[in-house]
Length: 346
Image (cartoon, rainbow, N blue to C red; front, side, top):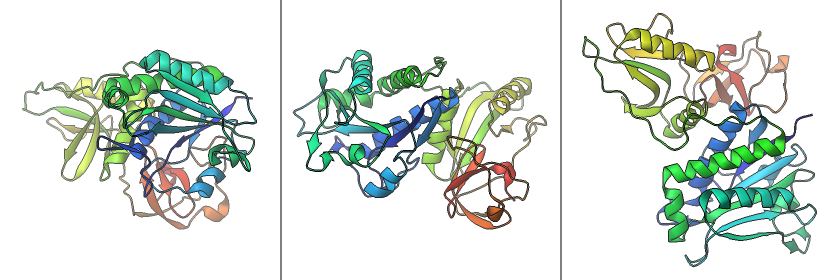
């Protein structure tokens, strides 16, 4: 049976974690975790994540999501120490071997060329010193400190987007080896594609769009998913919405071809612009927004984003719920804390 992993973006919400040069730790941990989660999911790994937005997650609710439910947990962090310390650290439980902690530290160091500070564990009065080890049960948890956010050398390295995602991808590759998942390198991991500026004869472009959100964090998450699938992507802020686009073309046939690729990759697709606003091959999908009330159809089958296939029970169907987050093909329902396909909602 394939091994399972849950990724934990450290801190969040009212807990910013460390700070350095105007950057909060919680933002970088979420950024790197979302990239890794989406990449591993695209590669077929059995992976989960403790938070996908900047929300508060205290000790017990966080560890309850993890405890004994997965083979491994990687808790992502960035260190701080008055700007004087630097380098990579990984921390493992006093009850486990250092094997995975050392593998992760080695791959981060070899990719980033940042110094290795230490691979260690720490004992406290009640066993493990860190609650992420002490309270996650049989799940083998490794705490990863990618560098020191308040050290100028470490900070400047990760401030570079290319470096940031290069390290994130290297960790993804290492986890594929640990989990027994076939690894395939993405088309691009270190560049920000820009929209085409070629105009059609009508003066407009055919823009292939896979999502539009009021919350930029949701647009960023979808863009990461598109990037992981090998699509060039960019975010445009128009009319109060952050639109995720994967191409802009002067010829409609090229836009249609890109839309078909996106649909095959399980994205909702809408073609905007050109002489006809909506492509016949990719009609505008029904829109969903945060705070909207929806019902789960009686024909709905399974939840999404669960490590194993989980059927939606009949008691959940036909009732109204509030959308808390919107994905490309599914939404998170607040009252039941579960992701459901958009096609299973009315």
